Image 1 (cartoon, rainbow, N blue to C red):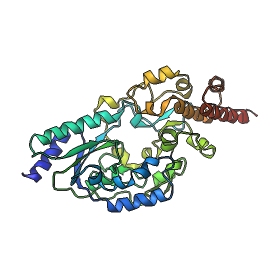
Image 2: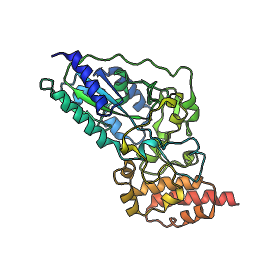
Image 3: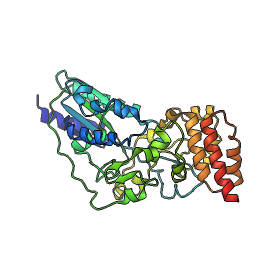
Image 4: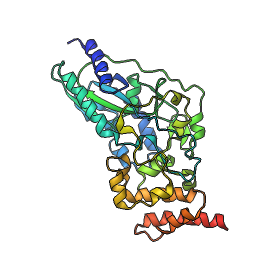
Length: 350
């Protein structure tokens, strides 16, 4: 089999399927496994216990998928023409939702395209073992994509690409095919520290060192219980994820607009107000966000996040009325954050 020729065709097929970059890496991740163990040892993973349970699998692709020799890493850009985040965090009445979550959930789309790529490969290659992933298993996506030459790990720990910034999704194919590998990308962050300075909660403790327990994406998505009081004011109006360390990154001046309709903004989530979203009933939440990544946190945490945003919003009769309407909510979690928000406005009024 002409493996070099096959590798070239895989990249061509990937482009035809809507991936903006395709690279191939070996499955050696021992050094990354050591760094992961150090990070877990600091407890910076917070409540993400699955990171501990599957740590060994993350560093050993062949243990996750037997016979894995190579990983085909694919990039799909998600930024849309509607995205305009410059003043969103500063407009305290608006609800800030991370760009990637404003459209449809990306997991199914990426896995479908990855499977189609595998079908194309199977049409030319001898029987081979493979499995596709898109943020759906213990996979070191950033490490593998960096090894495959798609980009480099930035100081905010996200993957960066010179021609695309960081507004993109990653997907992988673990395969037994001994394809030729690509060279890793050079790093291009230099002396820039914009992401460290922009992080609202100082979650980026040092270059390449992220304390997830302070990260707003963790606090609004992964954390199941109460958002620590010391961090609530710093969360501002960010109700699902946070893009601040990406908005300020100079490389995102080169972010490309996606042609995928699935990533287009739905439900006006690029301009909705906190009061507007806080008024949604549970039924409206389920119906409007069907097919959205946001739906996985559930209605209770959605209200929790919005209550924090309203507590940080400029005071107004509408804001206070919205909060008082939920002051007796059946959920103790929601009530706690609503009462905190009301107390913030009462202190200001005094």
